[in-house]
Amino acid sequence: MSAVTTTTTAVAAPDAAELPQVRRRRRLSPGRPLPAARLAGPLLVLALWAAASAAGTLDTGAIPAPWTVLRTGARLWTDGTLPTDVLTSLKRAGSGFAIGLAAGIVLALASGLSRTGEALIDGTVQLNRAIPTLGLIPLFILWLGIGETFKIAIIAIVVYIPIYLNTHAALSGIDSRFVELAEVQGLSRLSFVREVVIPGALPGFFVGLRLGVTGSWLGLVVLEQINATSGLGYLMFQAQNYGQSDVILVGLLIYGVFGLVSDSVVRLVERRVLAWRRTLSS
Image (tube, rainbow, N blue to C red):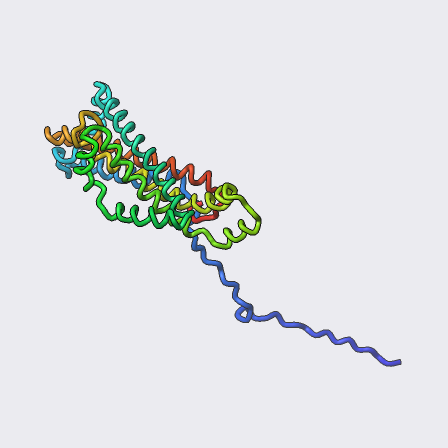
């Protein structure tokens, strides 16, 4: 009878240095959006302004304290001056913006969806873009008079150019494979615009829309100082003549709030409409 000998071989554990090192993934994204993050910068500027005013390092004649500006704004609102000027400015900016928005969209679609339209429209718009819009004011006064019409027309030009440029660029950047697929599927012209053109153009359109909204307020500041009897720009121009820097700052702050609010509204609509996109901002 033969003896069976069982040999147990001990397997030594590998040294820690011999184990493959697992590389930790480096986080490159900016992280989750912070709540009310866009207000942090303005609030910081306001805090520094208040601190410098309290410390006496600012000339109150040139830059009044925030509480002085706040009291001036409350006084102008109570006596009825500020509500009238704000309403007038909103009407001017809204009318010019609506016209510029419609013109920018129509021209971008006509130029982006047709070679003939592009040949007729794009070069003209690029020429208009190269001409300073505010430099057109004397000519528009001769054409349209010095009333409200020329102000609205100038605002419309300021608005339509960025909307056209960004929407047209987005249309030109649509992948040609999508167009070929639409042709293979036999889509009608209307279905092609609805299912391919509009989704492809929306990101660029919203960029142009944000620039157009900001441009309408920038143009309004200058235009309301030309033969105007009301409006925030007129209020600031009169305050300049009397050396009322607190009134000027009230007008500037209202312009800034309008610009920030309108831009935030456009960004909110953009996030809702383009919720299907995966971007750094989302």
